[in-house]
Image (cartoon, rainbow, N blue to C red):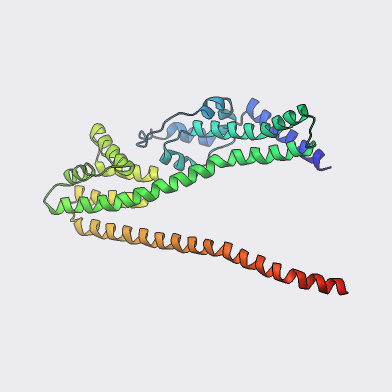
Amino acid sequence: MITALVLGAGLGVGLWALAVWLFPPRPALGVVLARVSAPPAPAPILATEDAGWAARIGRPFIAPLRALGLPGERLSRDLAVIGRPVSTHLAEKATLAVAGLLAPVLLQLLLTVADLSLGVEFPIVAGLVLAVTGFVLPDLQARADAAKLRAGFRHALSAYLDLVWITLAGGAGVDSALNDSVAIGHGWAFTQIRRALDTARLTRSTPWATLRQLGEELDVTELAELAASVSLAGTEGAKVRTSLAAKAGALRTHQITDAEGDATAATERMSLPVMLLFLGFLAFIAYPALTQVLAGL
């Protein structure tokens, strides 16, 4: 019964995926009109690289997965942060899912050649489990990598804020303070800020506009707040040195709080193995007595 249910579910999903691939759903009229009438979006600041053998193998599956609405908006932001194109990510998901689905079947064939067998249910159940795992694993990896990059960017941004307000205190202008400060730093975060300022210079737009765009692409609200403060200084002539120093201090305080929370969570996780060991020790002690009691009944 279980085998029949699993086979029926797999056949239904396969037929549904084939139908979606042959007859992709059409977008709603309102979505098409909004897409046509919307002003052109600025070119993204974050760079992406298309590479990997899984991406080349899984290219035929990109269109069906896009028709299903994958990936979501949140995951698309994470992919932009780590510099992975959406098409590459979808191709890797499809490749890993197909590989996980076929791996138990190949193992079963090898065991059959060696006059061994694991039954019919094992390759079916194991293949479905591995396929789901392979399909979800790239999403989890992308979210984890994006979270690490955002945390590192916030650390670098606090240092950049200190450099900017110190440069402003030395009598430099807003544009000079932004460009001179970013030239000092190194690493991925300063590279992205430098790209944003270079984009502003090449497109003849304001630096705070490109910094705000970078903050939206990275999903880092602190950078958008920096752009708003610098915009007041550049357009209204406001004094922002104190504001930038306060933002840098608040950002460092927030990072310290997050670090303390992570350390507390790690300490709690470390106590779990000790608790399990203690419970096992109690079971080891109580088992002989419990056996004698049950034998005497």
